[in-house]
Length: 131
Image (cartoon, rainbow, N blue to C red; front, side, top):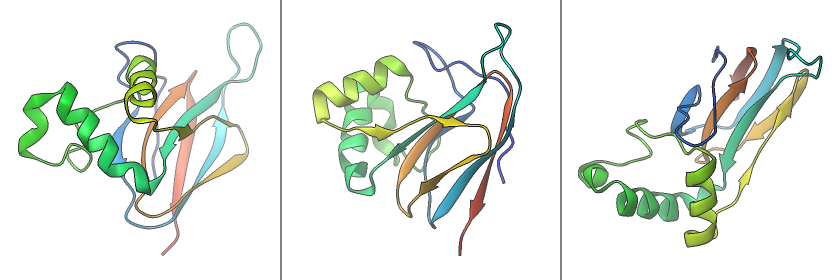
């Protein structure tokens, strides 16, 4: 189960969950999200990448962060792909992601998929691992 706090996914943002790889199928369920100050609903931004793109993501990170070449940049869970990095990942490696979740909805995360999370305006995302 993941509990998250409000975060920022814009340029320089750190998100609430860094890039990682799910080792089992999971279902991300957004149980609650507070309303935004303007009255619009809050949401979580789950950036889930296809398992087949893992090598391209690793190459991209090593090219942009040479210090991560000594370890696996996905498994190290040291990197968050903010808006700018995800745009560059698409432009350089043609890697897309599944994104966005509103309260009381679910989003599947297949095994060996990679992903990051940003909790936008204090939602409480939770992941249920299906073994």
